[in-house]
Image (cartoon, rainbow, N blue to C red):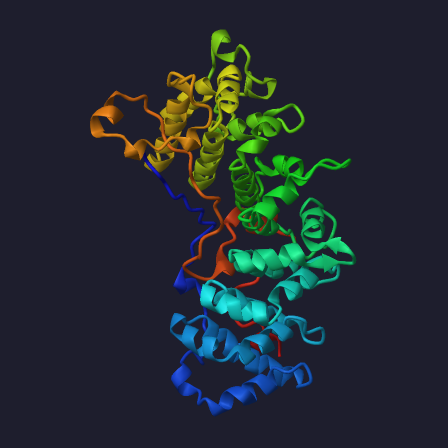
Length: 425
C-alpha cells in the first residue's frame, strides 16, 4: 500500500533576477538603531525618509540569514505591516508588500505577522476597489494562509457584516473590480482555506445562488493563468476528501467529474464503445485539444479522482461514465513518472474486482497484510491522504508569476526584492 504526499509548487525563482539594496547584513546595523528605523517607517515621517528606511528593510528581507533578526524584532514587522497602508507615498507601500512577501515564506515569521494583524491589512487592500496593489496583497495573503491559524483568522473576519472569505470569492470571480489587479492569487487563498474542515464546508454551502465550489469549476481550464487553475483545482481536490459529499459532487447539481477529466483528455479518437455512457463534454473532442500543461495540476486532478473512488458509489460512477478510456490514453501520453503513478493507482481502483463486503477503501489498511497476502490481493491503493495546502516556497513568492500570468495581468507584477521607492523618491 503506497502513501504519497503530493506538493504543489506555483513557481520557482532565480536569485540572479533579484536586485538587493546595499544593506543586506544585520551586522551592519546595531541593535540600538532598530528603534530609529521603526521611527523612520512611521506614517508620520517624511515620505523620502520613509522610502529610504523601507528600502533597507526590503534588502534585509531578501537574505535568509536575517530570519532570526526579524523574529527578534516583531516591532519592525508591525511597522512594515503598517506601511502597506501608506496612502501618501505608494512606492513605499509597494516595497512593504515586497518585504512581507519575502518574509512570509518562513513560518516562524508568519506568526509574528499574524500578531501584527496582517490578515485584516491584506483583506483591506484586496477589497478596496481603489487599492494600488491588490495583487501583492493577494500574494501575501496566499503565503500566510498556508498556516492554519491565518486561515482560521480569515474565516473569522468580517467585511461590512459579510464573511470576508465570501467577499474575496466574489472579487475572484469578477473581472471589473479593480483594473490594477487580476486577483489570480486569490485562488491560492481559497485553496489554503480548504485545509480547514470549516473552509471546505463553506465552499460547499448550498444557497439559492449556488455554492462556491460550482463557481470554481469554470477556472479548471482557465488558459490565461496557471496560478488560477492550480488554486482552483487544489480547492476542488481538497473538497473530495469529504466522502460524505461524494454523491452530491458527482450528481447533476455539481457534475464535478467532467471538469476533472476534461483537462486530462486529449484529441485521440475513441471508439463508439469507449464513448457509450461518457458525458457529452468529453465526447468528440477537437483534433487540437490539449491536455493540462502543468504536471502538478494534472497530479491534483488525478488525486481528486482517486478520492472520489473511496466509496463504491464513486467507483461505479467513474466506471459508468467511462473514465477509463480517457485515463488509458492519458497514461500513454504522460511523461512525468509521479503523475503516471497516480494514473496507475486510479486505474487500479477502477479495474479491480469489487469486494462486496467493502464500501469505503479508506477503511482498508493493506500495510497490515503479509507479503503473500499482498501479492494475491487486488492492486488497491490507499486513498487516505491529508488535504493539501500550498507548501513553503523556496524563494520570493512575488516572483512566481509565470510568463503567461504576467501577460494576462492588467498591471505589471511588482518585484519582490527590487526597491521601487529609491527610483521614485
